[in-house]
Amino acid sequence: MVSWKVVVGSICLVLLAGFCKAQTAANDPSLNGPVSQADVEKLKHEIAEENRSSIEPITEYHSESGDLNNRLNYWRYGGRLDLKLSSSSAFYVSGTRSQYMTRSSAFDGAGTNFTAGLRGQLSEETNVRVEGGATRFNTGSTTVNAAAAVTFKPSAKLALYVKGSRSNVEESLLSATGLRPAAGPFAGKLVGQVMDNRVLAGAGYTLFSNFDVFAEGGLGTRTGSNIESNPFRAARAGAGYNLLTQAPDEEGVTLLRASYEMNYFGFDKNLFGFGGASLVTASGLPIAPATLGSDQISPSATSASPGVGGYFSPQSFLSNAGRLEVRGNSGSLHYLLSGFLGSQTYTGSGNRLVAGFSGTLRLALSDNISLPITYALDNYGPFTQQSLQARLLFQF
Image 1 (cartoon, rainbow, N blue to C red):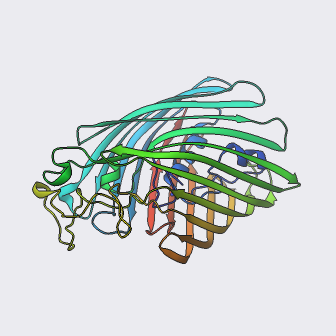
Image 2 (cartoon, rainbow, N blue to C red):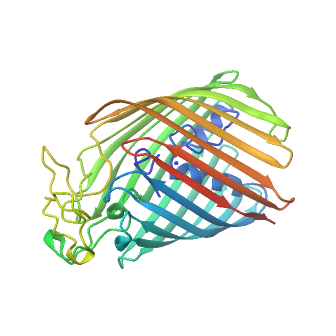
C-alpha cells in the first residue's frame, strides 16, 4: 500500500536497510528512497527472508498532518507466515486489518487484506518474486493488489531489475476506502478508492571500492471509481559511498553509508480535490454523513481547482537529498538508523526543506524469537507523516 504524502505512489515511510554492495542496492529499488510504507514493508520482508521459516504478529500506527479531507490516520494489525520451500525459495501469506481514522470519527473506515506470494531463484544470477491479494472495505467494495519483480545480476558489480505493482493509495479516506455520497453528482455511487499501477526498471553499479551509482525509471497510471485515470512518470538516481563496512555479525557499527538521491515524479492531471465527496463544504464547514455530497464543490478539474481524486498529484515533483545510514549490533540488539536532509519543489510550491528519520531496533529475545520496532518520520510533499510499527518474530 502506497502513500504519496510520502512521495509518489506508493512511494515512496525511509525505512532503509543499509547494504554493503551496490548490486544489493539495485536489488531493492527502495533502498535510498524517502520514508514510505513500502519501505516499512521492505524491512518486514527482509527479516522474514532469513534462512528459516517464520511467523509474526504485526501492529502499526500511522499518523499525519492535514485538514479534515486529507488527514488519514490508521491502526493496522495482523500477521504473516513465511515458509521456506527450499534453500532458495519460499511461500508467504499475510492478513491485516486496517482501521482508518479521519479528524471526524463519523467517517472512519476499515479494510481487510489477504496477500500471498512466492519468491525464488531461477538461476545463480536471477531472482523472482510474485504476489497477489485483495482488500475488502467497509464501503462494500473490493480491490485487487499484485506485485512481481525480476532481478538479474550478470556480474558482481552490476544488477538490473524490472518490477510491476498494483497497490492501494492510502492518502485520504477518499483515495483509500472510497466514499458513497448520499447527494450530489455521485449520489449512491462509490467514488475514490484509488489504485496505483506501475512498471519500473532500474540498475545499480559498483564503480570502484565502496562507491556505487543507481538509477530507476518507469511509468504508471492511477485509477479509481468514478474518477479520471491519471498517467504519471517517476524516476530516481543517485550515488552512495560506504564509509565503513564489516561483517554483519560483528559487534559495533557494521555499516556507515553516505548517499545522495534525486527523486522525480509528475502526473498528467491534478486530482488532489474532493468535489462531490468532500467532508467539508466550499466554505469549510464540516458535512454530516447523511448529507455527504452536498459540498457544492465541482468534481472536475479547472485551472483554479483540482479534480476529484483525493491524492497528491502535481504536474512535477523534484527532491534532492543527502542521507546518512548506520547499522550495527550491540549484544542482542541490532539497529538501523537513517536520516536525510535536502530540498523539494513541486507544482504550486517553491523550494522547501525536506527531512526525515527512520530507526529500527531489533531485540533478540532468544535464538528463535526477536522483537523488531520501527519508527519513521518525514515531510515529503505537503504533509508531515510518521509511523510506528512493532512485530514479534518467531522463527522455526
